[in-house]
Picture 1 (tube, rainbow, N blue to C red):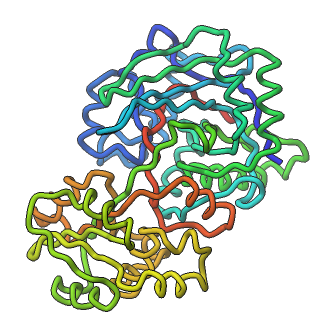
Picture 2: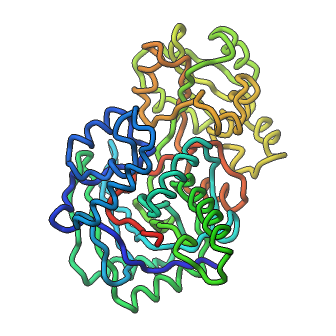
Length: 426
């Protein structure tokens, strides 16, 4: 059973709630974007979620001090009455119609994985430790976990779209994503949404690190407080929930960029020939488009290498490979590009099993094929593997079967803004 609750959100005072104070989630903010966000507004939320400069050692405490100061100065204020918070994003992709994703933010009672709340991918250790230090210092959920639920009859959507209160925020960002954010306070709407979600399973789409951090923090607090019998604020975390059937659910491919390889380029190509037909690509065609076309016939993966350039790797015997993987995985997962890459290339050929990926930085991730290609071309990377995106039904299957995918197997777009509302745990 899933328990969600309204809460008294901590958010920007209306006089400060301008587009410049918000930011993407911490894990997609690189060095250049962080600099831009710091310059954009003196109250940008990046000051609460990332260190301002690399020399700042005790930055988690500094972030907590900044949070306390902003609350004291009423830059951030807490709502007087509990609410759920509606959040709608309207966006478009190249050659795609305009789409809208609708959801809401709430507190959710923490549960171990598999007890109505499911993960779909593994996480990496370093981000978990970093987020735990920040949570200890601030005692506040800064960014929501992103969860999915089934709602084929649109029971929840009815209550989300029949809003009575005016939006707290409505603006378009630099990526042309329209954000609308509002409070849901009507008792009937809150009760209906909470009761409907109580009967549902939740699959984490994004924010696995944040959920695991919340579990670790809950364990620490309960041990320190003598395991109180009733739920405490730290037994909950901040979550954004949207229906898996929502037309705005969009997953982009997450490509793999290797900073180092245990094989030479020639050795890798020779090893790949065992399972794949290798097709060189000499023109300027996008590998993403090429492998999407090939995927109608077999599993295809793109590859950029420094010396020999672009390749399409086409699985020779799809049926045999999937049958082999089905000893460990459901058939729906055995056909995933990311699983084929992991099980047939990264692990056996390059010595990169999931536990290595979760504890090292040998592999980085990007949704931008051009960026991946540029890193290889300029010598910043030894190889880049280009993948097709994972489908939502595959994500759901992985989660409910408790068979996590490799780290960063999905990229749900657009990302949720950080800073719309915070969840105090005190």
